[in-house]
Image 1 (tube, rainbow, N blue to C red):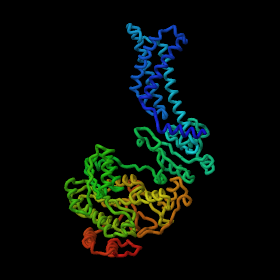
Image 2 (image 1 turned 180 degrees about the vertical axis):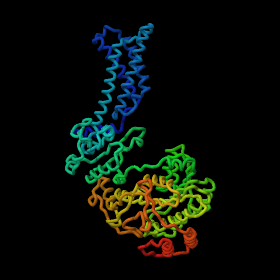
Image 3 (image 1 turned 90 degrees about the vertical axis):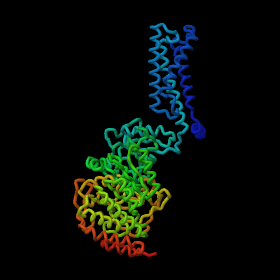
Image 4 (image 1 turned 30 degrees about the vertical axis):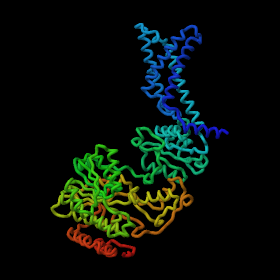
Length: 633
């Protein structure tokens, strides 16, 4: 019976809310009648002791004063059912200022003999101010309580634990309580501070992390765990997530302050933790002065600028005082959206997006001739391993041919730096994509040794980037959303992972480190089993591997390794001043030799079979071993 009444009431609340004009009218009516009540209280309900007509005239005057400040401070704005401390502050401020103004008018009226309507007993003004404040509060609190009672349903609400009982934790607690959808019920806080463990904060118990056992989670029916600590160390965050990931809870994170809407946290700002949070990486410290000096007043070209890496490099570049950023990509739609993003977030940023193909030398020369970029970040490449196994001609044409064209234009138009994005798949390559990246490394390194050139050539090599196009993470997330199965190629396969911002920050750092010719290798941390990635992503979705979502092993794809390497055996590692960047020392190459080999392949590329393309690449990269047979068609 009660639930039926609740259902009907909540339907009314959902479909209807008091319009602002009506709230304003109710507030002014409250001001008017509370003034009459104040008079009655002041004179002990002895009506004959004061003039009724004068009281009504004074009450209308008081309503006008209050109306002025209610309109100024907009205390009538907002849905009453969602009244917050901010709304209470507006009411108090409105009433205090109205009281002060009425006091001043009364005193001036007595001194100057103004109209008796303006001469209101000060005691009545005080009584009225208190009465109107209480009544306005009561009205709002009554509606809020009634709404919460009507909308509360034990069947729909999810039990929550908040990690962190400080300011952010309390803010999240109040946010959940004020949630109009009323989806959450707080069960308590988790905090590592022993001084407050066992006590209550804002009416809720504070537990230590030792209580987080399967029995406790099941007994309390905890369904949501919210991390609510500002500036939590990555290693600590990783530890906290790992302690909860096996319990089947949804794990949410409170974003940093700068991502809140207009400085206010909303329930929709709470997001699921990401896989990269399980990497526990410390923030990268950049030599900002060196990067700033290298970019100030410069025109910068980013090829592949609408891709995952290229677009993030462009975003990172906007932090510095460059002259202009030229973003080149052949993909129309991603280029458009990147341009719109930069215009919206950085209206003062001077950038140009150009649709262009790096393999079209004439088109690229027009860009170099017009803009004369001093810094070139070459990120344009095909990178999907299985696709490039099927299309080795295109892989060579774009990856190697595009690099050859852009690097030669950089020399011709005297760019100061040329930075190419390579891959860990270039080390002892077993696939077409890795082989083309290795040839690009060899070409760029040979370019740096040419005599009489001023351009510094830099190679950056790193592994898988989380969230990039073609990354395993978006694929796994889609498979989980579709109900599974999650497919992995081998139970023991491992990969290095880093985030897109991490990779691009290190690209910028490496770009201004040496004198040219270096191959910089980024510290990717420890390799991660892809099976563990799949299991953790399923658990982060609040599901159980093999129970809710199946994991299926489908076998290695063409050209796929069980594990990746960052250094080859003949590439001794040399440290740099940056703890996350090392140098792979490679032998010098004859530019004329490798350049002629590449030219010969490009000239006859369309006449060769897939097998012949592979054989030609193996002549340039003897360590390239293809484990799969190619069917020429």
